[in-house]
Image 1 (tube, rainbow, N blue to C red):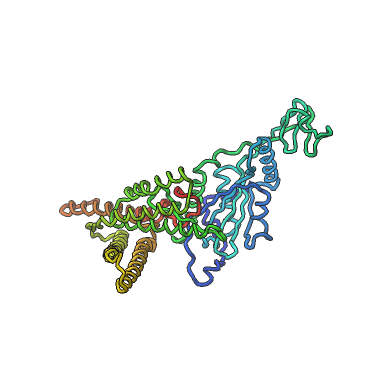
Image 2: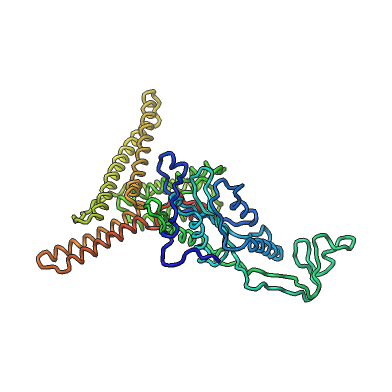
Length: 505
């Protein structure tokens, strides 16, 4: 078995052995590549041979950079045959699952790494973690905008010694390979053995097992989440640019994930509308957090207004996209009404010469200013809605023109309101944080540490403090830790989660 990394050197130093100037087609146009979020998708394979050929064939892949297998080709042939044989013997309905596949999206900057070693690293990482054999291929899509790994893995381990079972009597097998009790069951009307049926004489091998049973871990609900976390951590350990760092979506957080629309997806229109409803909720969450609503309360509202109603609706009538969007938009309106009743309180901010904390303060002040604009727009919308309501039922030409004008003005204000909400998120992401929630969490911790330090300095101002420098260094270290928590927190919002979520599907 090939061992990829030896010695004390880390993986980053090993795989950055060759500089590849290649860039995606998007980047070649002089534009900055869109940041990628964590994406690991799992599929069940019913045709293992066909899938391996598809991911590893240069004729079928326009941009194939390498193939790496931890086992010989004979292993995959035996695995497919064993799974099909066991499936037929079981008499189960449906189709046989021969193996599973992961699709792992990589940052475009990873093109700078040696491709062969990069592929080996990702493959060996899985093999060493789960102790099963894998075969993987490194690809680009046709548009050169999606750099990714296809990783196929076995759910079964190869036995050290194959198990052979000898027939204790003559054994009869039908066309499907299933054991039947008597000879009559494999004969046709003329008394001849039907084509495909067979007889294993007494004392001859009737069954051979090359593999142990399927590992239960791959069927567990948390398997994919664990794999995503594992590969997200690996990618983040290799990235040098902050914008390439990834995150794993936290279902227990306040936000809703959106789903990427794949190429030629027949449900594109439905998914787009679904995503817009989710984004509307996320924007409202940002507004609520900036105005001072605790994150725990927002999470509680999410459960009360979204998780429970959607779950009940699915249990009663199944999933309906229109019903889901209606529930989300109703939850948005409810949360907005609660938010509008709260006034953002400006707290006293300690004045210290800590650069990291002052940078956080500057971001927080920007959020306050944006929130002030949002409140102003909301007041204008309410006034115009009241005026429009007063004109309801009136039929004069002038009044109808006024109604139309007010409706247009309200629509413009709603669009401006949405843009200001988006500005909340873009303000913190430009500062390097995953989301408004992760920034505010880091900011509150930093503010508490600075406040305690300020109080400490006031008490020690009249006496000689021999521990002052050490205390200051301790606070600086905490501030750096809090900042990194907010910038690298894997529990932030992922706006491009490509898997099923805790809501809807």
